[in-house]
Image (cartoon, rainbow, N blue to C red; front, side, top):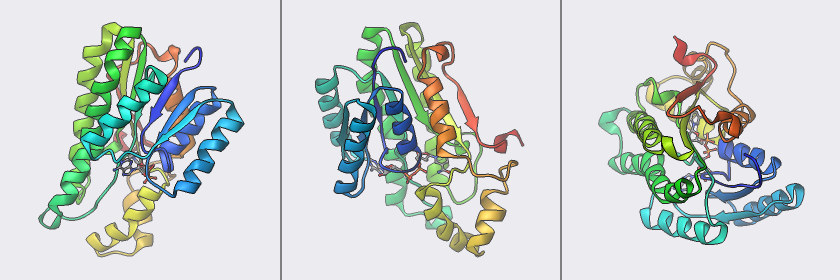
Length: 260
Ligand code: NAD
């Protein structure tokens, strides 16, 4: 990214998104934060980013499972910054249950947030990127965009869908200086992973420790959780000018999980 750019990182009040947002502000770019959380803590974070890095930081608490809220957020972002140069679609939730017991409402939420929201932010950000001849779209997918695990039907379907969306938009944007890629993390230690440990333990009838050792890290040959910093550094590379030829790629950052 040369010159000061503006990045929207969805779901950046926690976990991977927060790590990506901090990396981007540390490189001297403006950031639009989004996600849920304690209003005071978010305002403190916003102010710290501005003061520490001398950039402009805004926060929109839009619920990205709702099309109207996405449209309003995007309209306000475009009015304030003129363009979103770097769009990181990261907000996502998980739910773990056998398909016969999978609540239909959870299916609808996961498809809307983990897949639909990226469709909406992309369709609203892309025209200005194309007009300016430069843009970067990074979709935070998952190893579950490439392989499945039982009991995660909605999540796996949404993430495979996100991989398809990534490739399609990459083709449509290729002649306009806009790259579109999907990063596919393995297990990263964040609140999303922490929360699914008891759910997985219940679904599989095993202890929480067994979930960590035999389910989560069983798939990851490095036997280590990926770190948010490792994902953030890679996203920063994808957003750089050096990555101009890298588009339409579905890229694992998963400690070797999908090599098996
Ligand atoms: P997290 O729970 O720490 O953070 C999720 C973020 O999304 C939070 O900021 C939350 O407020 C926000 N969010 C949730 N619902 C929202 C909504 N309706 N509207 C707007 N924002 C909303 O999770 P994480 O582990 O950092 O996950 C981030 C992304 O990375 C997700 O898309 C997830 O699928 C993906 N991912 C995570 C892992 C992992 O192991 N943690 C692995 C692969 C992929």
